Length: 181
Image (tube, rainbow, N blue to C red; front, side, top):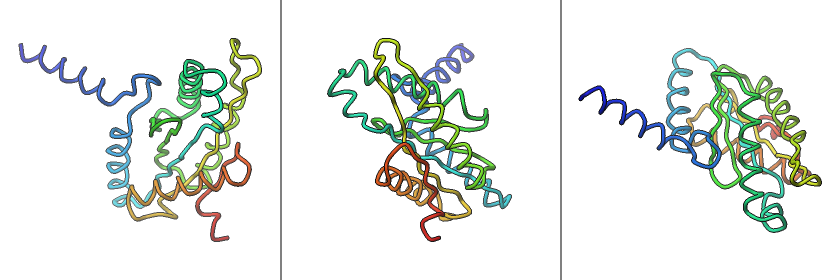
């Protein structure tokens, strides 16, 4: 009886922490995971980097091809990102067309390399049912080495870097640490 109840609790937790459309972890899961990682990093003096990813011109996909196509784009981008990260990284849907990735034990320069790999992989996605559709992402990178003040500040820095990527032409990776150089 207790074992069956424990199984149901675990299954319910998994449902709550998984985005129904993309299969990615949820915003709540990501926040909790990053806060846990940051506590460990403070003790070990290591690094955690965060990527803030936004699908470029996503509204145009929904407006011209419909929401079903938009959902397909979200699912395919989620699959691609998940396939191209390390097993210890966490990919989560932040909201709408925004996706975040935590990279434990990655400096900002290592995270930049990972972000470029992810950006390139997304740009290579094809959609047989929409042969003219090309999808790109803008990625912001922040690291605890640059932003050691907790999860909210780290995510704010990655988000700010992502907007810099958008404003400088989209389909780019920008590191928060590059702002002051």
